[in-house]
Image 1 (tube, rainbow, N blue to C red):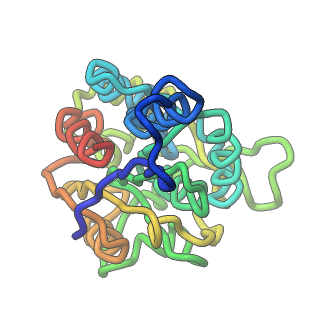
Image 2: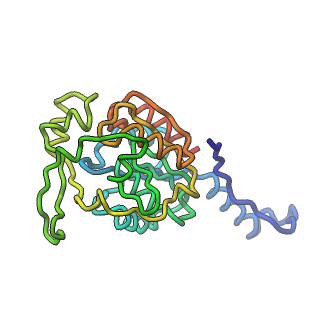
Length: 270
């Protein structure tokens, strides 16, 4: 597990005289110092069957810590397509970025950060970190794990969907026990009713070249996850060489254990 230093820019070249301290070189150096010391913007990416509101508590804690935060609205149509949308989204953000993905959102940050020098760290919160050519459905079987979520999906058509495809929802009758068993039923009832569906095809679409091969990564393993098997999470975290934290949590660790998740994000951001 590597320790990551977010190093600043270093100016090289002939030394400037003291008399030049107010000149253009000094102004440029001052600008570089301001840029290199700036805190990264933290971009939070939700997964399927959820939306950005799942990050609300973590967002508030990060804002209090003085970070700029943006919660990305994930299209949930496929890891490479959604990754490209995220890549374009990041062009609107100045300065360094830390990407945080939950669940399927991990596959999106893995694709969207590839080759992007402004992304300094990846944080996976009970999330997929797929290898190139691997789908999230295939990743579920890593380490010998198993999930019942595919047995409890409701698929509804949407305009333009390919034959056999559609928007997949978790059956509300199983939402609490599968997705968020450590949250109050009053909360999970609302989450089930307002869930964002993901395209069924997104579960089996191969992922592209992963950013975790070149970008330092952190990973939170949820031991009580019923969506992504913990065995698969451990395998993906190890494969990515991620700095890893493991806790007793359901799939939605950012909601049931927001303090732990915020702490991990801050470690990556620093």
